[in-house]
Image 1 (cartoon, one colour):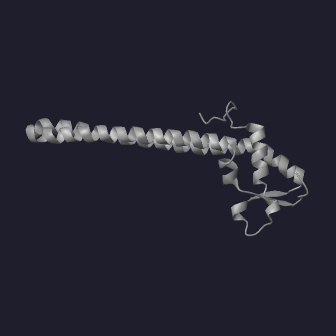
Image 2 (tube, one colour):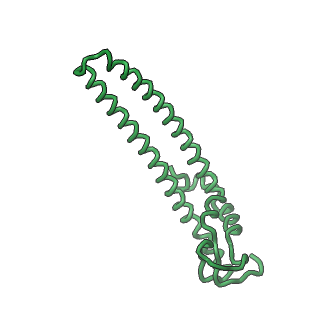
Amino acid sequence: MGVRDPLVLTIASDRLFTESAFGKRVLLEIETESAQLAEENERIVAELSSEEKDLTQMRAELPPEDFRPLAQAFDEKVQSHREGQRAKLDALARRSEESRQTFYALAQPVLIELMRETGAAVVLERANVFLSADTSDITDEAIARINAAIGDGTGLQDGTGE
């Protein structure tokens, strides 16, 4: 690793994830699925808006006792779609968090090896350090080594988030 021999190292854990091949793959997948979910949501909203417009026209033509069940069915459909979309969004957020946890678990042996090589006693989150020499930051080296060790995580057990 070079001349560096600090007892305390720092790491930017968010960068470690987002700039790694694993993190880039996961973030792209999440972004793609989020866009698909947004498109699906727009399509559902358009369909429901059209249905609501039709229902509004029917209201003027139907007696209240005939209209009420239609309105109630529509309200239930809207609520069902909202809950379904919310559940998909929650599942996506969970998957994102689980992928981060998996990444850090897979990265841990690499970080431990870096600590051993440098003789460091501790690795601190860079954002929590008030002042340090740039030589104490191992983020770039850790990213390179993690990429070499696990790549983008495809094919690793628990590396896909699926």
